[in-house]
Amino acid sequence: MYKKIIFLDIDGTLTEAGSNVPPESALFAIRKAQKAGHYVYLCTGRNYEMLSPLLKYGFDGIIGSAGGYIEAAGEIIYDCPMTEEQRVKALDIFYKNGIFRTVECKEGTFTDEAFKTFLRENAREGGNSELLRWREQLEKELNIRPMNEYSDQPVYKIVFMGTSLDQLKEPKEVLENDFSFVIHDPDENGIVNGELLNRKFNKGIGVEYVCRHLGIPVEHTIGFGDSMNDWEMMKTVGVSVCMQNGSEHLKKISDDVCLSVTDDGLYHAFRKYHLI
Image: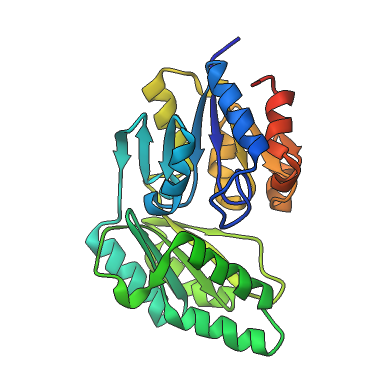
């Protein structure tokens, strides 16, 4: 049996979105896979601070910030925040166009207060109430702080939200040479939710870095994800598996679909692919 590298997204894959507690079935499967000689890596859009509560479960390494920061057995093998010029330009153009920003640094995440106000106002009118509850829970669990506490730390990724795709026209024109825009499935109320990622890295490039570091062919990898920010990882790994609770588009372009995170999906998929 070949030694494999298993790459796991966190939110919606290893855990429910915003949670730091994986199902016991997933932890059991991960430990069994490691005992069988396989490596298990987190491969997430979360920055280091937001993923750190999961490190106690003993993963072999991490791909954080959607590929911008990579550790293998505690050794940093890649670290690529935005330049100061890129950071200032991106934050300014989003602000100019009324787009709400959440900036992710290695040790800190900060969000526009106006965004929460916008969601609360819409929730009072009956719209976006689910998104508001999800966002407030996310901020509580992942320690997302207000933008006025941000003090120019290096930024790896910017999560953005707006009310229409038209708001992104100018930001795309200004930033597209250096950054890609990953747009998630539209919210039923018209909220546009996405991530600004440096073209120098992505989850797929991160997978390749780890494979070279460990000397294991990419064909001997399997990746699990649930949203379109996992696409680069999914098209790079040897086998791609989307969670049943995941994006409908990602399901169509993945090799397989497993049960949802709340139905012990990882455990059953690990068994199906003889990882345990």
